[in-house]
Amino acid sequence: MNANTTTTSLDKVRTHLSAECFNKLYIGGRFVDPIEGETFPTYYPATGELLHAFPRGRANDIEAAIAAAEAAWAEGAWANMAAADRAEVVARMAQGIEDNIEMLAEIEAADVGKPFREAAAAIGGSAAEAKYWCSLGAVLDAEQEVPVDAGGGKGGVPPEGWDVVYRRDPIGVIGLISAWNYPLNVAFRKVAPALIAGNCAILKPSEIAGLSCMFIAKVAQDAGLPAGVLGVVTGDRDAGAALAASPAVSMISFTGSSMTGAKIMEACAPKLSQCALELGGKSALVVFDDTDLDRAVATTMTGFLTNGGQICTAHTRLVVQKGLEAELLNRLRERLEKTPYCADPISERDRGDPGSADGLSDVVQPVVCESQHRKILGFLDEARAAGVEVFTGGGVPDAATVGHEGGYYVQPTVLTHVARDADVWQKEVFGPVLSVRSFETEQEAVQEANSTPFGLASTVMSSDPAKARRVANRIRAGAVYATSTGEGLLAEHPAVSRGGFGCSGIGRELGIGGLHEYTELKSINYTGFSLADARKQNTG
Ligand code: NAD
Image 1: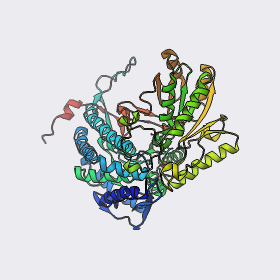
Image 2: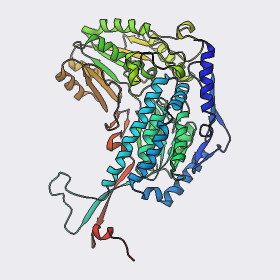
Image 3: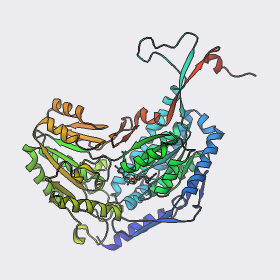
Image 4: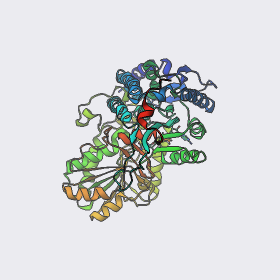
């Protein structure tokens, strides 16, 4: 790999980024400059070169977006449409994303540092997921004015003469604050259900990598979404904080770290507004010694290396039964030491490896930015000082190994002799770092899996289905994979709700429950006349 190759790739992405939507905020249906006229730099993680300067929205820009959203909400046309009609507009937005997968994937590869093929698979998945959301428009319409019944209980039917129905109303003006690791997916997973439910929303993407999210503004405008219904304001944590604290904002849907999640709750508390929080994780991969060794090695690799370990559900804790420990670790080290580095994520297409078909691959990508790189290396220094053993990796690869100088690369690292209270066991490192502990009994396996404050996802691997089920039932996590093969690890399906226990969050995303998060349940009690009377056209 020579410097010219990355320069050519970068130039191509810079051309994409010259379009208006990547250089303006989107407020009131128009692309506008930030009031202060400031920009943020963003760098290519593979080399550290400047990629783009994008607009820095401040609190005053957030206020302008909120004012536009309040006006659209007060006007009421969007909220009063049938959800199925709103879904048609969102479907056009999703089509706009699907039509531009190649360009968006190149932008995400350059912004996050993930291989192009993984970015393309993720963005394709986002467009596909949107189709599911759109199909729920009609489901939501069918849930309007549903008669209240006993709900399965006894004696719970409302009194005679009452005509009581449930509705699911939109919440109002809401804020959507998103993370950088799967920028477009995380953002559109909020935008699509929020809009189908009838809300007016302001999206604040991550300042670390959020360029692909800016395209959502373009597809909204092209799809004919009414002005003000969606605003997109790029900015840093201060812009996010202004959005969360605004009295006009009735809900925040947030994806990000647990620490920021707590701040969002604090901001929502004085106004008692809702917050849905999708937060960090420290997922365990529990491997029993009756598991096929090859499958255990492959699953461990996928679990902690995909997207450079920068996934909320990354399986960064290996909990392995003693009988398999030595063999599994030795095989893992062999594989890791041969794993190629991804020198130019933008041009990283199919290497022909088995995982590439579904977008997962065993290559070492750079981590997203300089501060994240520093933070990961800091975790490793502290771990060494605390007596943790570096089984493999543990530092920065040299230029010959990567294929060029610079960039934010970390060697895939396996840590052993890890105490249960060590930071690398308890905290989210968000990099290619795996911590290992072993167990003898099923009881110990469960204790190890549940030994952190997080509870986002976990996996139990065994060839014994009954044992896998017993353990899966006792793991505290919003999503558990019970498997003999490791197939489907990290996979999500739009119809399957997920979310966090404990410090991993509040609320559930995806599935019909994920759409309901953006609604309020309301009962209307008709007396003196019936709902049927009320439904008759007013002939005046
Ligand atoms: P982060 O918490 O640093 O930032 C997330 C977003 O919050 C950004 O847009 C940021 O600008 C904004 N923000 C920061 N401080 C704020 C404040 N005080 N008020 C309002 N907004 C504020 O997280 P990150 O580094 O962007 O993302 C990585 C984290 O996201 C990891 O912890 C990861 O596990 C988590 N994540 C969770 C899921 C999930 O579904 N559970 C998915 C993806 C990422």
